[in-house]
Structures are given as structure tokens and as C-alpha cells.
Length: 295
Image (cartoon, rainbow, N blue to C red; front, side):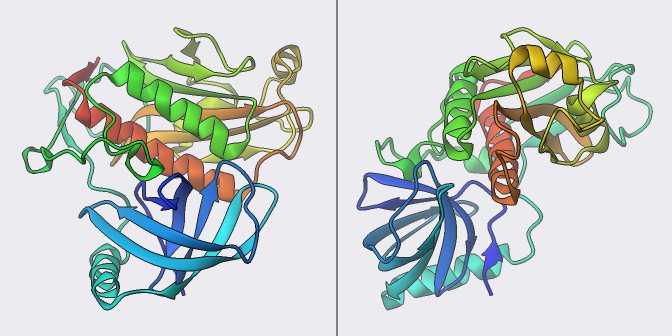
């Protein structure tokens, strides 16, 4: 049995290419890569696991791979020290619902807890990095460090995440919106079919609004038949498939990430898992930036 990885964890092949770990055990893992892999290929592996940061070097082979870039890896030679570190990490993360989120401060003007996103009621949210997490992972060009060194420039980090999100899900476009002045506003985008920067998202209707209201990741396989979407608007933009996931701290939704495709049935449950991991990465980027206030 493999354990789902609830925080952004990366693996690199030979220090050059790699992808995002979806689940993991002491025997192997499944992962999402930007391009399809060749099954039975032997590989050298470097795993970079978060919370606590753990690095594992081993060898293995790709046991299976599909056309969407997902692959299953079987470890062939896991050194004893690497096995000990991996066993310890799995034990500490067993059943963890998500990565440790940054501190959250809600202004006193909010008189009751927010059960779901309520943009009609003023909400001030401050996301600050935990003092204990001030150590940064060294810069590296390999994939395992690309999310560990997002830096303090939030917009630059969001652009980087949007590009990786589009690549991993093979989408035609990707967008990230964050709460701002009681609205969700697009802060990063990539691809021709993604909404323009500064676009305000209507949280009261539509597919994205349903994602915000429910606080759950949603998938639309065909905009022509899904009643949750505005089919005419999607037709004008050339969108046929959508994935959306909230960026959430406990019960407070502070953002949303989405990917779009011009083809129907373009995404599956593996892509939903990738979207949810990168939603956590957006929260990480917010915590590593300067204090962000959303009112």
C-alpha cells in the first residue's frame, strides 16, 4: 500500500528531469511528469520530501507509464540509511490531511467563523511564514527544488506555479486567483484560453463559484453538457474541459487555481490530485512572500 503525499514533493531522474510525487511507500511511488515516460527504463532517483525536509537517493525502474505523463516507479536498491529516512518520513506523515499551513490571523471585525467563502462579509486574512521554517532549501536547477525556493516575490512565484500546473496537466491554459477586496482576482495566468490578469471571479455563480462555495476540487469533462458552466462563454473562449481547486487554510478559502483545455474529457483524477498539490504550493508561496492582507 502506498501512502498519499499531501504536500508538494518532487522526484528527479538523474538530476535533470522528474515530476511530482503522488503517493509513496518504501517499495515505490507514483508520480506525475510533464512528458510521458518509457516503461521498464532504469533510473537514478532523488526524492525531495517536505515537512520535515527529507532527501532520499536510490535507484529503481519505471514499472508502468501512461500517455498522460503519470508513471509508477519501483525502487530496486534502497540503501539502509535512505530506507530509515523514508520510513521515518512516512511514519510522521501518516494520515496527515495537508502540509502545515502558515499562521492565519483573522481581524476582530469578523464576528463568526467563516464556514465557506463568504465574500459579502469583510474578511482580513494575514498569511505569515512560521518562524521555525526560516531555513531555505539551496537553489538548484533540478526539479526537486523548484518549489522549495519560490522566494518572496509572490507574483513571480504564482507565474512559476501556473506554468508548472499547465505543463503537468497538459492544459491549454492555467490561472491562479487570490482573494482581494472581497473578490477573487486573477493574479497569474498562462496560455491563450486563460482569463486575463486582474479578472474578478464571480463567486456566486458558475463553475468556479461552485468550487469556491463547496471548498472542493471540481472537474468538468465537457462544457457543452455540464450545467455548472456557462456554455456560451466557454464556447467563445474555446474551452471544453476545466479543473478547479480551492486554495484553502482550514475553513478560509484564500484563492482558487484552474486549468482549461480545448478538448473534452482532457483531465482525469490524477490531474485533480496534481491540482490539489499545487493549491498547497500556492499557500506555501503566500507564506514565503511578505505578509499578504486580503480584506
